[in-house]
Image (cartoon, rainbow over all chains, first blue to last red; front, side):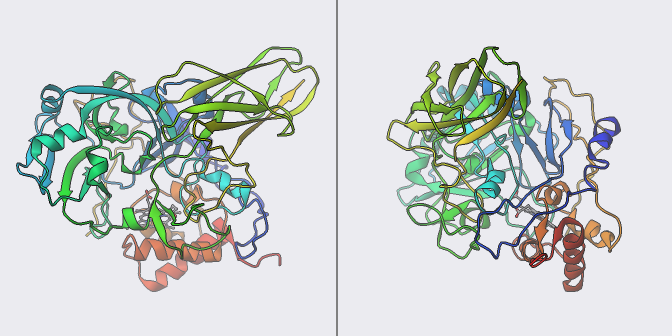
Length: 406
Length: 105
């Protein structure tokens, strides 16, 4: 550990650059965060070295170049837990997924049961943290609360597992049931801290699209991505994709909880936004369906490119499952736009890779921007147009990367 | 009651397909904290539930922000921090990881 970290954090952490920060009291457009602490790059179990925002609980961010692939490799897939007390060992002989509450027959299923007693299904789906790209809100107005992720709190994988619907049907959902609660094995350090408990309406749970996954990209789930089981909710932000899933509770009534009613919420209005800099005092609703988004995987910021060389610009785009219609690209900071070439379709919940071949003819600084539109006409907002929310959720403004042609 | 997970100070050489047939060894990262101004109080309370990486990741923040964040830790997450220690921590954070709201105005 010493070798890897010391160099990264000594010095870096102590000098948090001269601040040009202004209070959130003003509503002017200001960039709040200047020089940040550079998180160390560390290898965690089953992972390549990744940006470690925190070790306990582990918060690992993928680097931008990951977006030049449709499928995110398991060993580079981002990691995000909420509670510090995570079992470091799971014995599959003992591990059981419990289905309880308003059901005819409570179940205790082993991972083997899930593999053998239910029809296996596979889906390629994006997994994106609700707070992904949050740090870019600072550039659009005011920095927000919450972990300041770049774009690297998302990935796309092939998930294999049993349908939640089939599991619930085996247990027999009672007619009085209205909600389904899910939680996993992570535990807080202080008993009174709210548990990480998530809820959804029974219709959603029975929709047939949700799966209890035991495989990710053809392997057991990596430990830090939720081994042995994880709920998969295609098209939705990952707040309810519970890791180390251990309990499914069918309920007749909604249970109020911090992680449903306070965290992971946005303003309950059409734009899901409030005036930049407002506090949390607004009526809220949980975040749910993802917003159309595209990011650039190559080139990465500040890449230096030789004039006249052929650059294959590439990245990924996705939405809530309506399908990407077009990804537009600008090489002049947004003045003019052209079309990129969409690559193979891996399904409506997967990344859609796009490419654009560019031969820069003049030296200088260039700003590459991309903007996706989906099949129902949802389009990414410009950076200065994006609606703001105090939690910093669902950032999806136009992505940009500066490069230098020499 | 507070249970603090003790993690081996080991950055195991991680093979990519490590089997989880034995406990995983989580690396320990020593996120730096500026010394002085009663950093020991922040050390005592702010590392119970998460690393100091959470604080460093925020960048420089205003006194109202740090006051609100410490209040959130206490009120929402039930951090067991006595009132006077909360103030000490806020002052420490503002001094080393922030700024007074009206600085420069």
